[in-house]
Image (cartoon, rainbow, N blue to C red; front, side, top):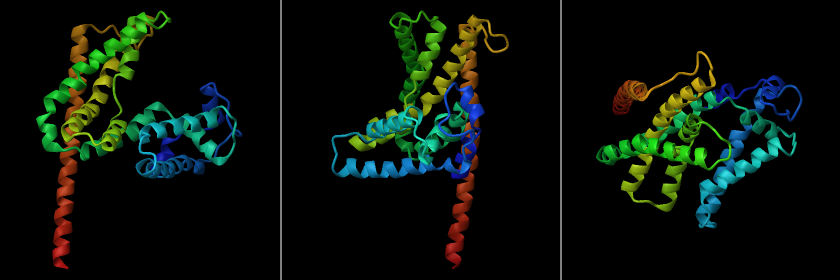
Length: 273
């Protein structure tokens, strides 16, 4: 896991930092060996917080406390000018490329959540989850866009507001799953929310692609923006969704077959001895 983390963190120093318009905490270069400090510290801090919230601070939500602690650490790394090794590691993570963050961490998190999902209950609730994850995500995108268009005093175009809404419309499956485990929610409710959370990331990504292209087309950005009609948007939505589902199905078949073969060989080896 941590070799991948080291590769994921941008380790170029002053050049990458100046591109973001921020000031570096330390000198021109930051050692790559300090990148794992923040994940290790966050894991240790999470264990301590989980122990306290499950035994002594039962009224406080674990995910909320971790969110606040992460905010404080981010403020300490970017605003207070601290220059210890932990703050340097936090600074490296705060400037991580968003595409690397999505491609490296999000698939593993979603895979773990789907691997622990109750398959039987998910099959029964599949149509409700699909309704929540696709049409209702579009409804949430539209309602958020209305707030940005009519309430926010920025005079943004509606396509930009729809892009903004598509970013905020998807819930976090990890945070939702952890919260449901804490409150002891009924299994059926957990399957509905977890199933929707697993599926809505893909639909929100498709909506973001469609509306961001429309917004860039309004700005006149050549080669990136595109005027997408309703029919073209629907075709793009189904094409990207079905393509992602097909790729996921192929990988799942390969993974299940591999686990089945490894399980048979391990069983045979145990019986032989």
